[in-house]
Amino acid sequence: YYSEQALAIWRKARNRSQEAEMVKNLAWIHFHQENYQEARHGFDQALVLMQVHNLPYSQPDWWENTAEVDLAQGKLGEALTSYEKALADISGNSVPLWKCNLVYFVGQTLARLGDLDTGEARLQDALLKARRLNSQVIEMNVLPWLGWLSLRRGQPETALDYCQQDVALIQQVGNQRVEAQATFFLGQALEALGRLDEAASTYQSALQLYLGQHLVKASQEVRAALARLALKRGDLEDARQQVGLIQQHLRNSNLEGTIEPHEIERVCKQVMDA
Image 1 (cartoon, rainbow, N blue to C red):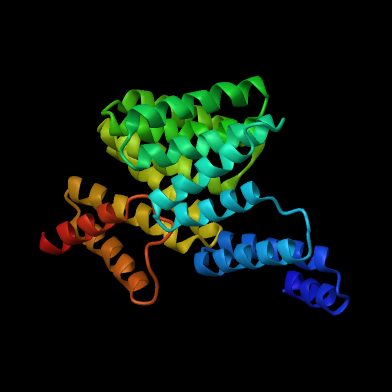
Image 2: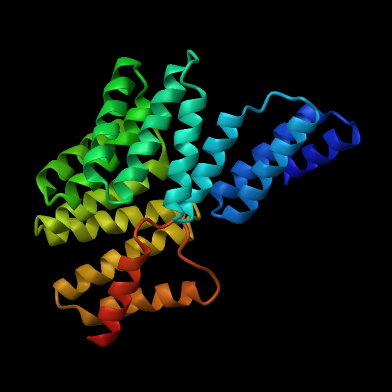
């Protein structure tokens, strides 16, 4: 509300620099509210404003912003292309933290596309650079994805270690969005190790973290995990309750922002067929 008011003031004052900056800020607000189409529109609008008025919104910055939207929407190929373009565009500049962050995103995207070897190499490179640069924020982002990747390799013990490292780091840095994701991955590692009671408790913690930030779309992934876990524990009633909540969500929304929407769909079908 206040950002929209500020945007109207800057437009009336014809301050194009502040107007463009507020459009960009509003786009990030939409992004964090899981309104991804509105976010993309805002970033595009900000770029046009800055180009028309010769304002400093660099092309690599725009590539990165739109790539994050594509990544959230599951458009992995488009996201990878944009991240790689941004990384290439800043290759000659002295911006090590920016480069490190882009390497992390490239690694995450490659891993999600199924290229685990190259994805892991990029993620490890980003982790090494983040530690050298003393960037706990980037380190905090990289660690859970190394855990996720380890799970895909059938290495739940390694995944557990990465996720536990990350949860401990988040206690120092503080970022509930990353904490929710890391806690969810931690639950997956515990589930893979057969520690089902701990996994259930961890999933519940992840769910509360997501819902506490109003990340309802992302939370559906946790509900699917809880349903899957309930089936393993022989609690069909709980599994159906979780699936019912997912189906209720899908009547008016979608699964944008989730990492593995097909797994959500598979679990729902499995529960309904049980």
